[in-house]
Length: 447
Image 1 (cartoon, rainbow, N blue to C red):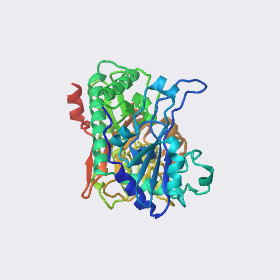
Image 2: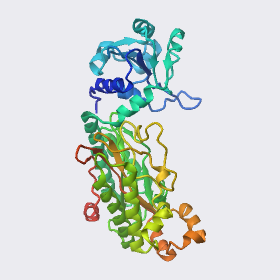
Image 3: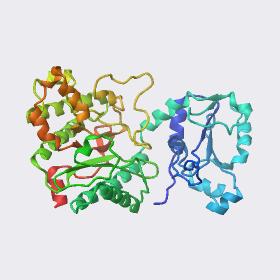
């Protein structure tokens, strides 16, 4: 799918407003091509996210200069090098780049010094990760690597309508790929083959890159949150957890579904799956402006605790178990995270905000009050990971909260996670993910 001209100048204006400086420039250097260790084999190129946010440029070796007084955006293209043209072909001309990207001017890198002299900035605002070695020595003392980061991170936290539509399209491609995998899983494919099929389905529909390495985990492998081997066989009686999301024009999707390889839920699979689905549904009810993200996580944890008590896996009073952090060994990660140009997007923690030092919730990637325009994942899960659970079983103080026989009965489920991508609206949320998740829908799809 050809990259369309994106209205990134509006992103620049958001950043300028957040930065709140009247003089100086913003300077960023884009990503460069990298080669595999001690070889000339090029690694796959992906633009640095903040540079893409301001420019929409997906090619290597660019710079950008933004005047804070006028808002003028000058894109700095790499100089034409004969050897590079021989191998890679002629790049776009400045005139073509001006038509392609939402900038005011395009010059070659040899003119960077001239651009800076014309601006004569008192301050050059850039990011801590930005390589400023291309700046002339006379400008190095003017570099500020502190102020821009919070300004750009906060801008990225609130998605424009066109960004939401880009993410919706990425979700559509990923959702269709997940559906295809559900349909094909019964044919006896292994984890590796399902992984390959997701990549194929994404690429053939326009998303050549993935937001992250897919997780394809069958049975007990799904108890590992970021399992990545993806090379085991799959038997018909196993649950299969697939956490995979295509990236479209640098915008991420992040979707997880768990389904029975044989097409029909066993009783144990159904029991655990229904708890996780209820965790997500309860979370959705609170997804609206003004609600603290950590409060939604705590609600999901309480729903998990209540469901596991009802099944008999956990024993005791709900409040006591939560106070002792017992359910956190089975729901050990955060409810979700910000998503956008990066799958774990920036802005989850405002400067000065600390993580909550409690089991489970300390892994929450975001502590924000939800506001319209924020895009987040909602991904509750239940996992039977011996490494996490066993210390509680060996401790007499916590062993009493488990029914060991019931726990062992459900361990074969492995892990269940259900994950959708949503955007907070003025009145609630917009779910971008379209993969079926009700039990009857999944069984019908796989029939």
